[in-house]
Image (cartoon, rainbow, N blue to C red; front, side, top):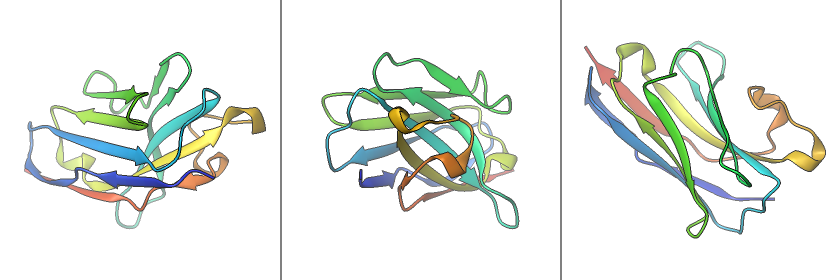
Length: 126
């Protein structure tokens, strides 16, 4: 099991930027995939982005491509989500997730992840 701590959320105006962080309290091994998901009030949790810990390859939801960037710092066991050009529709609780690919994984499927952060709230005002 990997314990994850999300941070970095806040209130920002449309067009602004935020950087979310997800710190793992234990070492993340190379087979892990780290993902970001979000959930707006009354909506299902949706995929935002994911990164392979081993080689840094990334995956993005179409709705955030070109605006959000996921990255990792191996030494700090931390994954980041840089969010630029934020829109009101990006308002949600954002959650970091982790899964060892050895056990099977579809990067964009929330149910496939078995380690979750507590979430951090992002509010984008118009």
